[in-house]
Image (tube, rainbow, N blue to C red; front, side, top):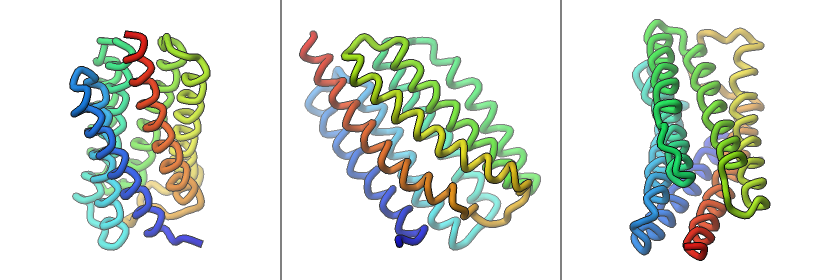
Length: 214
């Protein structure tokens, strides 16, 4: 069985390859700005995974704040890319709540309640992924079969992050001092790699479908 470090390494490698693919697609079609936004968001998540791996080996309060901020920021950027793809311009409804949650997380972590910071961050990511799935299903005008899979993968990934927060909440782990390591974290590592890879492939499919329609 793979250990936790191997799962994190797999997530980082998968994200790096996916981001490079997105950048390559954007270079061939610069008008598809949402593809560039996706690539940037995935790079932020790769940075989060690398720093989180370092945090598991050498935890510190400041590194914890950076790790949690990158996780929320990465999924916020991906959410904004979905809004770009769907021609939705009201970015504030995603940006403002996320920034508020990041501020609460930073404050809790600064006061020593890093467990609370993880719970708030996992809740934020769950909300962003749920919003992505809902937006594609409600606002999408492409093949409904593709949109159904996008919504499903977003929902599954959101559920995996929600479970991570729920485990900490149920156990009352308000103060950790180290990176959380439980069954939910391991399941999340596998699910996140699978879902993000699938969502990346479907994003490219939607891009090519849009190009054909135009």
